[in-house]
Length: 428
Image 1 (cartoon, one colour):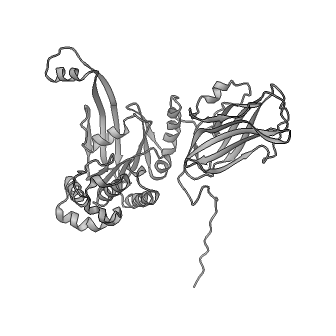
Image 2: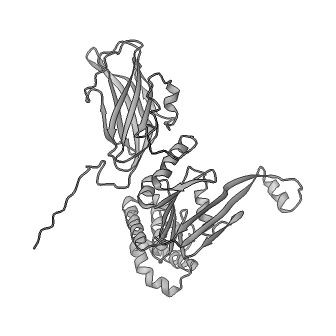
Image 3: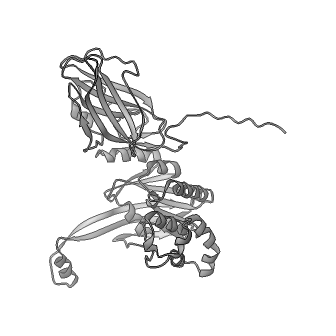
């Protein structure tokens, strides 16, 4: 990788003036007020970083951390309050949906408009037109006004223009989440080509799997401040802590002590470090009750984010309010469309719960490896059994929490077969 710095951000600050009333803005604009009538909101505060030629750099952070603001300042859409930006190379940017498009123009007219704004002549755009139209693949809609496009068609055309006009630096802000899965695959294939050609990519995304797979380095922002930058794995680990409102620190190589190893921990301690669904569906006759649950990663941390291929525990705490014979504790993973993907329970696993009388409590821990493909899932829990020969639901928590699986290699279907492949080449 080249040591040449193509983007240099130094002490970047962006401050917005927030007014309580419209007339306060007017008074200040006309110079009719001596006192300050606005509140200062810093979207960015004294941020500095460099991007080298040929790097693929990701920017991550919770909502409102300033990720998109950084990209807009680098591309010239916004001006900074303080600090400097130096860019060495031709930038092509795909920011928020429709940025740089005139909705009254046709798709074809917008291709030429965008190309001209980037600095290409009509002849240069003509030479690239066939590639752009083939990549966008929107057919005769290219001759219709952009205002008639669906969001998917919009982003297909915008990305086709951005990526096929030979940029030296490509900047992308979450736009790919709009396209369908096949178009996204085509775009990421183009990313691979760009990396092989030594182009520079700067990308903002909430898709941690893509960040982990494609980025050489990741910058972590929070509330307008640059917290840290480093390897995708290290930054994703810190991002996990931000999601659960913990002060992020770099993880040490050795695993910490299991946070829930002591059976006497109170129920509130289980919730700390987990993001729960406030609208989970809960029902059952409560003869047995799920008091708490947690996901524990291989470093002993409670989390909603797991790496594909890593080991993890699902832990469920149950209290029995009446005497129950052979209770069954279960968990189930569903995708966000509601399809049940996998799950198990203590009956399947032949893990008998011996003491299930009134007032008894137990903690059931399921140990497994995460082989689901990268993506978003919903985790549900249940405690069931038989009363008088009838199947009875004691307590169920549907969609209790989300689980994000971060993966650098996705295969076909819901889960990975973990194949080990050998190739034997036969001589002719």
